Length: 308
Image (cartoon, rainbow, N blue to C red; front, side, top):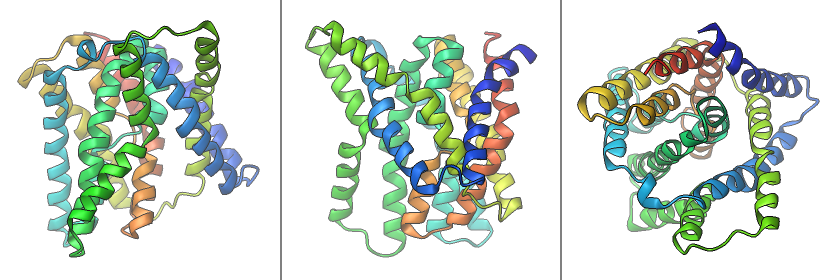
């Protein structure tokens, strides 16, 4: 356990460095926004493309894996939504709390950290989880929030579709598999370019996470703690039951799924909450609390899954 904690510590140390730079205003919110954009559109996309371009989609796509992850996430999503409704919150607020309970920082934190700690083979199952998060839950939040305001129309589905088509992670996954599927050669200069650009993804993403946390609010601590518990404990626990007992997944892939499910709340949930003006402070606090607590819980999850 201590060995795993020490291995994860450098990742969170870079997040802490970014947080310090943001809190002292050495790194402004505008600078953080541009760094995040660079990582999102260029560095991380290069990393994902380089990996998927070496794989066949048939070797990655595992419907048992998808079913196990989607089923577990749906249970936790519905539980968080029910708790929100029980507290008298609106459908839109409940949808965002449910989103906090199941959408982890898989792209910015999961891919670089788990690929280094659990091996490059971890990227394939993480990409499947990322696809489910973006396609299913990313679409669902837009539909629920828009529908709760009585504005649901066919145009909303078009907006959802265009959002997916413009997402650089989706684009890099599709292009990578297309490159592999057509058996296109990768010239040395292209490989070196992608390696160089992709190498910036890990430190850039971690620093950007920390710098963005500097502007997050710590209000609504009780709700933030509940959502952190749902994301860091309930979600990986439900995934473990689903992947190990109900829909048995190959042990290594199951371990990656559980470890990725233990990641803290993703920053893009706050971006959506801010865009729709629905509970942004609550989501902000959930991201801040869950990221701080995950310094310990992620190490515990990785240490446990490595036992099998």
